[in-house]
Length: 342
Image (cartoon, rainbow, N blue to C red; front, side, top):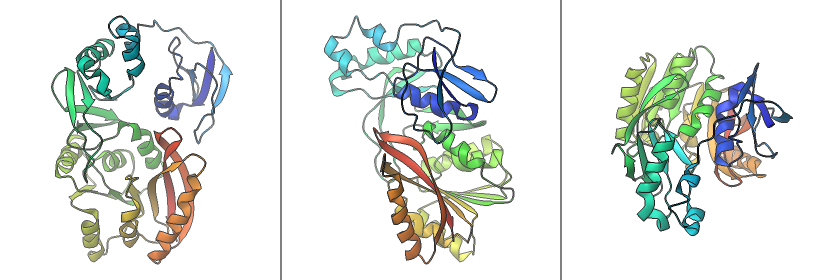
């Protein structure tokens, strides 16, 4: 078989990418080769990863392939309906979340029930009823199969998180990015997590690093309540969770002369609006993980913007490193700039 050999630590990120772009050869199983993982793939492509990845010929055990969702529905949907069918979905704990095109709404229950039958770890299938809306970035959904619930438990990076997929924003796809950052945190660091949501950043850091203090700021009261519950669920001892607008909360931190060694800003659309606030609680050497969306081939265009924002606040961008952490759309990347304050 044709295999893609990558570091084992990046296996989850690669698997999500291969599934999203239908590149995984499901006839075979992934195999481990020491510190590496080898995924069966259907063809060669240009790996968009920031780590070593090479195509090799390998032998792997075959999977017993069950009919896909599309194959299972081929006898009940018309060819035109099958062409519009989207079978990829996000699995958030025991909840599957899928896009249903308007032309297939009358068939959505059948689609949802088919997904449940093929994924025994799911108890609920929800259809998106709109995009992320408002300051809280929440998304309306409707139940199309299984239990009528919005709550589930997600396990990521060794922590347990209670999630309400409709009341609070949470991205399971960012778990690998959270792991990337935690490996950089040094003992004794003070860490600020802006837009902390239900707590995946601060709780992950608290469980797996020796940071001295971790502060999370979240504006959505429902998400904040879940974060407090999740902090208790994971028995964290060095996490302080604050609810409110980041501008106002940081102003209070400035009054208290608080500064941080590391700041996460996982809000790509409006991170620029809050960078000035982050710089007010920074010091020389502080690492700011700044997120943005940029088209492939133009990723470094974020740097002039950052340098201008730093200068506007009387600071200097001393050093930087750009990491691609996911895609918003074809050729549009979610990036993280690890920016060091001068």
